[in-house]
Image (tube, rainbow, N blue to C red; front, side):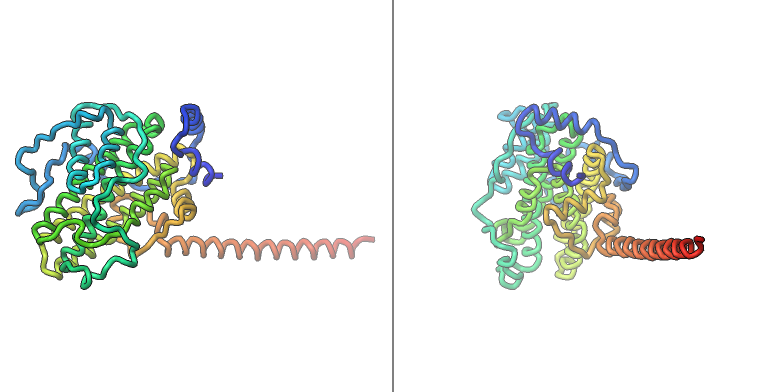
Length: 376
């Protein structure tokens, strides 16, 4: 029953009556007492309340502003959802990155409403990079790029997709603003702004190395994962922040080490900063996934596992446990060894219970036989 609720109760409404029914259903649900609450990231409220981050350039000593930090508003949009749709409809990568920041700035500075609109079927994309199957991505030695530029290009591709993933979440689920609350949309617009800054850093560093985004093929796996969860906000939270972005926490330190080994300390510092800032994005996913589960009256741990199974999403290690712990993802949600231990423990308990039942059945049978023999 819980899986049915997760699939249908938070799906984009086709009409106002569906939305009203959804709202009524959610209000009547209560959280199971067996639900384990994750430990929230300690920096979440600080991140939420932080001023607009204008450090969109990577200077000699790290992030810095680009000249005049004043950002012009977007006059053609009157709500956050409309602003997000504009970003999604922008194909040029740098223009998309800049517009993402302008959109977030405009919404915050001008107190625009959340609004509601439909996202485009898929985000606008440039002609390059060519999108191919992951197995067709060239190896570093065949890419035409040195190893540091190769790794940076891959990261830039992830960050560009992340901009669209965050804005698609804002726009696609904007009809649910009364249920999810303004904080949901504020958080994911904030995530989109962070991701746009990360792409700007990657793009700048690629240019310094003599390359640009689009100089080698890339895959479309990230957007395909996003499309999987387009019908369900709980699935979107499970698949994107709690799986895809959490993989960034796992891969970040390894990527930094490779860049240090290659001798590119400047790029390694950029990657380390991006990986550190991704903790906030995963923490946001944890917070809102738990919130949705509370509305649905189900345990987050089992709901997370059910959704990954239903949407055919694979969890891959090795895991960066310290970063995941900091972001607030309980290990029993994703750690296969922990899950296997739990299954083995349940199996062992079940076997013990079976033995007990068999003994009881044997005793009852013997008592029945003795009783019949002793009858006059």
